[in-house]
Length: 212
Image 1: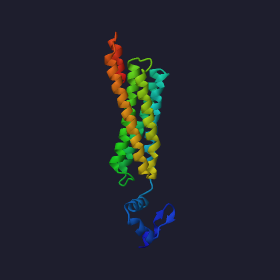
Image 2 (image 1 turned 135 degrees about the vertical axis):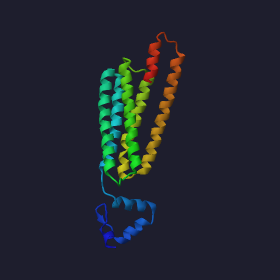
Image 3 (image 1 turned 90 degrees about the vertical axis):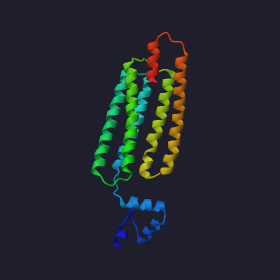
Image 4 (image 1 turned 180 degrees about the horizontal axis):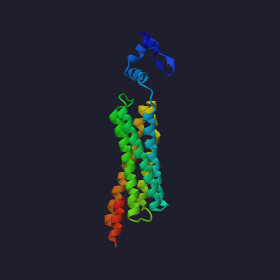
């Protein structure tokens, strides 16, 4: 089979014997498939871009500790628009392409969920501005810190998709889940404390609840 000798493996010619060796294991078959597929890096570029935007949005939201809500909201919204553009480009690329390096549904879902996270950050920033909150409460700050930590992990781990380091992806997913559990506990405690305290201004209590 002359065409087998022409396969490229990282710049080296794959001899027929090497191809057969690869086919003997599941990992080898996956490696051979990656060799045969077109080397299109733009899929990973878009995933890494939107993961980075999620982290930038989380950092911008955290600036509410020291900056006006209107300024924070404008910054997060600008990042949200950039994320929408990534989603649009991903959708167009999927519509034009038959073979993708990652399952089509996974590409669509991962891009969409990262965009949804940025949308929710934008919603939080809008609430800060709409309700004219001057500064976040301590629980709000703790939640924003956990959000920044989780998105930092995501932005750092998504490039491993390009390198097929799936074990690293699994490990970092556990880190994100641990941070999420911490955030859930902070939220529950904050809501409980909010309704246990005596408030002279019901509107202030309602604003804090919505902002959480």
